[in-house]
Length: 489
Image (cartoon, rainbow, N blue to C red; front, side, top):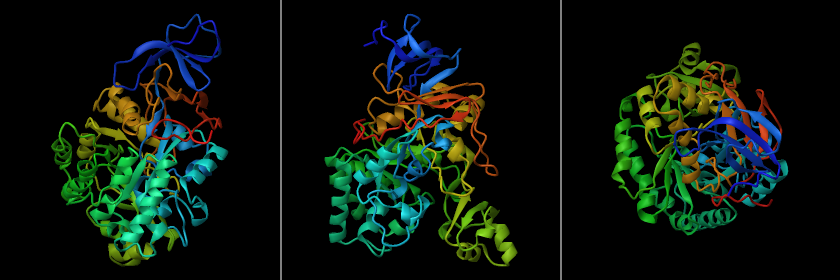
């Protein structure tokens, strides 16, 4: 129901080209905001507003939802969240790839890849509720919804992660997951490719199925491999839906390694094999390079590997692994061993595969950015404008309406974020105003922390979080559950 025009609203955005987030063609209209919500759409000249914004034909979309982040601790560390707000992101999904800041209990330094999130001192949330309470005290410019990391659970109950969990350890992990889901987590994530989860057999992962089903929660996974045996790894993931009837989301779907270039159609065919009933989906980032910790199993001379940080040899960071090996007079593998622990960008993807996966109708957009990386992959600052500017406008890969759907309505539906991701009366006023002709990513692999062009204004829950290229400390973000409610408000 439209808001009564006789009452004043907080903000009206006039004459915007409104993309609803559902993939429909845009409609020129006005949008009214009162407190946290969209209260009226249409021709609103009769309404009174405290703040008036003349969009003059600029595009207005739902705030973008970054479904694949590692922002668990970053939202507490840097609550302005400039890397996200500057590209129109108003909601982040944390806890991906099996690593989450909660529920976490560290007896020693954070193991790989939990160390991507932060230092040991920052892991101080034994229960998800503790993390939510900290977020609600600190506040941030973005909404946060959280997954529980399988590797985090393993580290809570196991001293040796390079083996399968025992029945007793699995019981403890099930109990911790059950509690976290009851406190508002969206589901479970795994990072089975990483050494500290790779020894977990499928049976260990399946042990969480009934807990997830009980809470109508979802399962996301960084596959056991994204290289030669990727189809087998997808079968392992899809089995969670087949056995437990729970939604499965494959993280950063890709064809990794030169041997696998050109196989994207095979990966997409795997989704079709699940049948029309299947709710399985995936996310992807819009770049032909990945980024993570330096994995000895991925060391190769078939593509460039750029070292972003090294604890053992910090002076060697921001160089190609091949150049470091040459300086030291050793093999690539020996150089990688000497650099450990370290981070890397792997230029191991094929552009045609990236485009095929991005265009897939089940693909959502996620940045997979690493905010703690001293030299982050440009996806941290550029993913969403890159999809809109490079892939939609310049490459014509899909329409602007479809591109926006992939980062708004589709994401909200898959993660069951009620009243988000769509411009509709009664929905939360997470909004981004941008110039479709100007929007583009500026971050590069050399200068990776540059904000995008073309984003004019951003609102998070009705409060302005970006204006005139300046991120504003509104701290209006909320912690979201799969029912769309905020916890402990």
